[in-house]
Every structure is written in C-alpha cells, then in structure tokens.
Image (cartoon, rainbow, N blue to C red; front, side, top):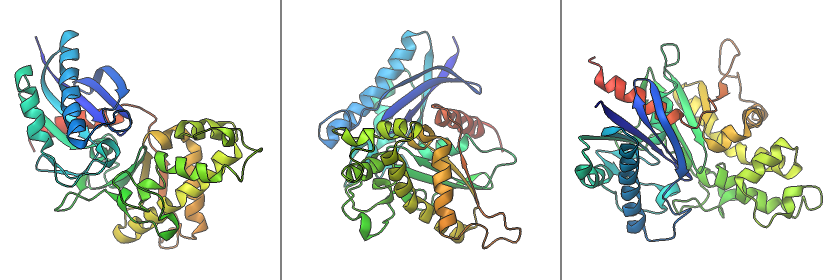
Length: 329
C-alpha cells in the first residue's frame, strides 16, 4: 500500500482537508473549524479539541483506504520553530506561545505518522500562486480575519520573529477604536476589513438603511448575508463593503511604498464570495487616494487582482511546498 500525505488547511470558520497525490488532491473535505466560533470552552480546551480533530481526520482517511504517514498543516497564525504565537480567529487571545508541532507529533504518534509539517496558512495559500513568471507579489486573505504574505523572487518574507504577514493586527486609527479584533486588540485591520469586521460595520448602518435594505431588518447581519445582498444590489451591503475596504487600501498603499511590491492577489473566503465587486471597490478606494500610478515610470501603478475561487487553494499550496522541500536544490 502506498503511503500518503494528508493536507489540512485550518481557518477561523472552516477546516479543509485532502490527500496529496502528486499535484492532485484526493477526497477533499470541508467542515466547521474546531475553534471558538463553534465551541465555547477555555483556550486549553480548544487546543486539545484541535489536536483531537486532526487525529480524527487521519483515522477517517485511513478508514477510507489511505495509509497516512505524513500530515501537512496550514495554520491561521504566525509560527516559528514549531511554536504558534497567536491564533486569534481560531482560539482568540493567547498569552504564551503554543507548541503546536510537538503537540501534533505526540497526538499522532500512535497513528503511524512519521512526519508532521506545519506552516502559516497564508504562506501555504501564497505557494499556490508561485510560478516562473509570478515570483514577487503580496497575497492578502480576507476571510474570518486578514493576513498577508510577501513573496520576493519565490521566497516568503516573515522576519526573525515570524510576524511578517500579520497586517490584520495593524492599527487602523481611532475611528475604529471600538472595533475589537479576535486577538483582543482594538481598531485592528482584521477587526474592520475582514468578514467579521464588515458584519460590525453593517450593524452600524441598520438604522440609516431601514426601509431601503432588506438585510437591514435582519436580527444579526452575517458576512454571508452581505455577500448575498451584494448580488442583489442591496444598498446597505454595498455601503458596508465600500467602508470596509478603505483601511485595507491604506495598508496596500503602504506595503507598496515600503517594499516596491506592486502585484497584490486578494484571496480568502469573504473576498472571493464577493467576487469582482470586492476588487472593484478596493481599486476605487486606491484611486480615491490618488495613489495609483504616481510613482511609476510607465504609469501602470499597482495591480490588484482577485485570486482563484477555489476552496482548496491552500491545500494545493501545501502540496507544492512539500514537493519543493523534497526536491534537491
């Protein structure tokens, strides 16, 4: 029987998995993530629940005839040396680093797992876009939270403390001071421009759009309601989107000016759910800043494009990373 690698992509809302076979994903599955959004328990309980979920996934694929010997994990938080330093969209606030890699190895030891590989989820997502012609870019995920990674000539930049890519925790300004991020901080980009952030913006717009917006009458507006509203031309949904992208446009402008990176790929469940409307509003905000093209010789400016609408892109990125690591350089 052939040994297989199980790839797992964990987000704040969804957990996706598949068996890697070359460049193919076999039996892809999607389920609710084992985090605070669906389970009310202390941090240590959530962490133990997570380890148990990964172990159960290995068992589930084994029952389907796959001999899993390796696990490759994409995790929603900064990691270094097997330690997770924060996981706000999954576990909420953390005060000390968590030894994720050693915990997984211990939990999976009796399941026949010989190797466990773990990396930040946006890094894995970014790897799915690396090609010979696309080696320098910034990928930004807009989903439960916001994260990014800069790829320079095919290599990801994270810094000595592995925080490169945590723009979701950049302070947006006092106007958003009351918006609480999943990490516990206030006024963070991830608490404003993410799917969970736009829900807060929409709630504040209810009174203004009462009678003119169907979703204004909902008891609690969700990101899914906003996506559906955008498709139907709902005025509240459109206004919420227009407001929510402004801080992200500011961040993109700063990244470009600070690094020179001029290609931005927008991915993540919420942005992809909104589709072309999301990039259109983001570009409109950049143009409003009179930024695009000002600092380029050819006037082309920066390029902001929507990523592939594929639920399992991060798993494809994991497969490419594993292949790269296995190939002699």
